[in-house]
Amino acid sequence: MANTPISMTKLKRMLQLLASGNSQRDVCGLLHMGRNVLSTYVKRALATGKDYKTLSKLSDAALSALLKTPRSSSDEDERKARELQDYLPVACEELQRSRHLSVLQLHQEYMQAHPDGYGYTQFKKYVRSYQKSHNYSYHNVYIPGEEMQIDFAGDHLYLTRPKTKEHIAVVVLCCVLPFSGLSYVIALPTASLEHFFWGLSRCYDYLGGVPVTNRSDNMKQWVKRTDRYEPTFNEAALEWSTYYNTELLATRVAHPRDKGCVESLVNQSYHAIYGVIRNEEFHTLNELNNRIFGLMDEYNSKKRGNRESRREVFESMEMHCLQPLPPTPFRFTYRKQVRLGSNYHVIVGSEHHFYSVPYQYVGEEVNVVWDYETVSVYAREERVAIHRRSFVPNAYTTEETHMPEKHQAYKRLRERNAAFYLDKARLIGEATGIVVGRILDADRFPQCKYRSCEGVLSLERKYGRERVEAASGLIKECPSVSYLMLKSILIRKLDGQVVSESVSKSPKCTYVRGAEAFK
Image 1: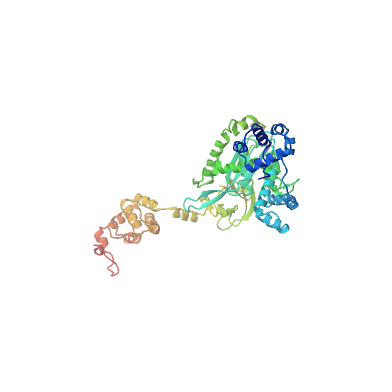
Image 2: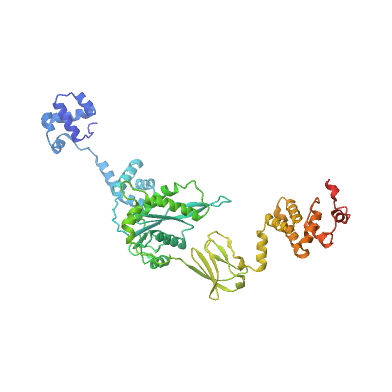
């Protein structure tokens, strides 16, 4: 092409080769030039009236003025380019502000205003070029112990229920000290205030101190009302910062680079944690977090090329700059007053878990106080119950001493199984153990025979161990055995007789099968 540009170095080399007597064909081969391009520059060189050697010794500016010509552009092209350049800053700002806007949508709006404008492919090329050329990044300089950056990972991790294999989503909190890069990641049941600030307090325990400031985005757990210059922080965040004597900072809205270090940690955690445990199964939050902590220890201790590890930098340069921790960790506390219902349990948390209170306080006003770890109940200005916090939804935590005696007995009864009844029966005697075993075996579902077994055991309290064992000996070899059969023998005082006599005394009814029916 006649107007195909070539570098000044290549142009001068072309002139040198021509001055040395090389043919145009040879020059094209040596410089990988098209013959038309070479021919164009040869014509321009000859038109100057100067020889090749003289032209090759000119400065770049002088040679360019003689042999190179600017590309021609029409007034129409200039107009289209000018209109697009005016539109690009507005378009790119909108793209940055709204995650729901696409380049295609912007091009459609551009074509409505400029029907003869650039097509989509060319338009997109100019948009991406503009974004790249205006994507500036400021290099922050951090001071040891001055700042910690905080954010939630965008993706969840999951716990698995052992029986149902149901997956339960948990959120992931990420924290980093920008100076050293020391990082902390923890999984939390939810992103609620109590879990969020409990996680931050655990992070401080891990660091062994408190940074001067803490920077997060405008999440609702952090900021009550956004403002570029003076955001309003919520009461929970202020209470937490006051407890640790540290300051709160919020990024500008839609400016994730204001906390670029933790944004980077979130992305790196996807590789260092999510990718590693993707095929592993965890049943409890503690199991999951122990695995995360192990992986983060590896991450913090890993060398970064020829540089020291994050932990080495932290321990040598930053750890001593942190403020001291208070004697105990911060606990976000909830309080409520309720009237204790007839089931003597109070409901706590968004998980709606039930905790027992001594039944004597049914109908009274009680004060419930709970944090991430414990649940306490107060009545008459005295603590009457304390439980370890559970996050199992819609479940019960019940202390047996809080239950009425009848409920305790019923609970113990519900907790019994076939092994329990067999063990108890064998304490009475061998024959009684055989009888109870046969009662349990008589049904596909042994639990359906638990009440019958309970009846057999109750006979000992009324008739004594010796008589129950003797009666059991009479029927243990019978085709079928039951609690009522054993009870009948004891009532009729047949336990001192031989088996044949006891059987002969059975009523002769047509609806009762004798032993011969089973031969």
